[in-house]
Length: 404
Image (cartoon, rainbow, N blue to C red):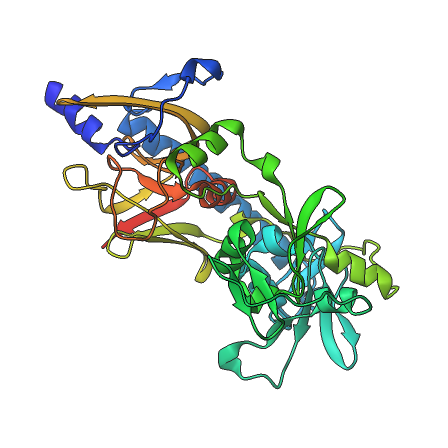
């Protein structure tokens, strides 16, 4: 029994040798402390996974039966989904659905606010934060779905003056004579870069009390309130940049340009056979590559998210194998002790347990993800923004494959 307890502790995750500065942990209200022993026995965890996967499979089978009962002549020619949030459809007739799924989904583009339209002889569709365009003559290798230059269009009548070639961590774009740095630079580079956002067409400036910056295809807004004071203090104390999922937000430029063009965005009647969009429509899985220290999330065969990770150091190696999410906690304080090493790590966000005491979770005491530096006691450390995205996307039962 003692050996079994030690094995469970060796599987447990968390904080490396962390916290670069002292912190008054009593000053913040905290959830119940965990001791790294799994909340469920292996049998209970397996039962939760089986039940969740069966429920998701039943939902997909129900949709299949629904489609089979509909007159085939009334069905769309390709997969079409309905978004009740805005009352519009999204399909793969022009590849828009898979482009949306693979490049950020709601976070980056928002929901569709029109059906497919013809503008200037081209198939387009408007989203809350973007305009998709189908370019049939573009090389297939580079993709035929492009994003409209709506940031340029909205600022065309009052373009921004260029900036001098900068120093000290600024990234300069001679194409538009503008710069990128700090939180906006990290977001631009991490969330899609030139293909998704285009070149900057302004510098950062204040607008209605917010720091903003325009790009060819987007406008960034800085939302510092998304990061809780505890994590902001840890960021300063450890001298690292942390990020939360909505610390940078995208303006609704798609809706603005649609309104400026007089395009009708009213909800439409659901097409017969169109299911409501939800990630459960596809078999979801998460793959963690221990060799590259990267995580990839899939919906069916389509890659929909990638994130750098930091896994267990030698002696606390993250186990390889095929597992599944069996428990989820928005926040957890983790404590443990093995030999002469003890730890107490408060307020770990977005925790998803996959085997024993090993979990995917957000991390605020380092930002060495994807560097090859393995720092945990077995868990899969993620940036807080990546951990939140995955937490919202995955359910209990989502497969997690850990391999070299």
